[in-house]
Image (cartoon, rainbow, N blue to C red; front, side, top):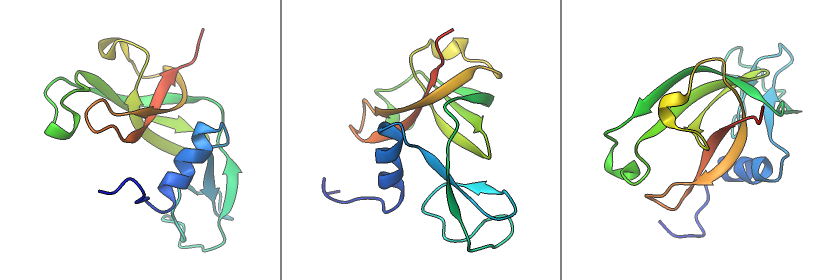
Length: 130
């Protein structure tokens, strides 16, 4: 894949997240989704507004990978979690903490990180300083 190839919508969203301006798309019924959506996946509405993503979210579920696919072999072991940020849930690799110490209820913030294996940007979830 060429360095100038972009995943339309998602790469722009990662840029915004890296700049501290992450957002999600919200329909008139308050359903949330992430770009590059053009239609609400819950109700089919096409009137989607950019809504600022909360600064912090809470981990709802987590799994630790010790034996990864080749695409992430240099990253293992790592924790992947789903965290609720206001109207949306985000999936990302938990960074900045021992993977085995990650638990549900942990408060996290977005971190755009780089995969040690592929060198590509990935969505990270970093524990909020206590």
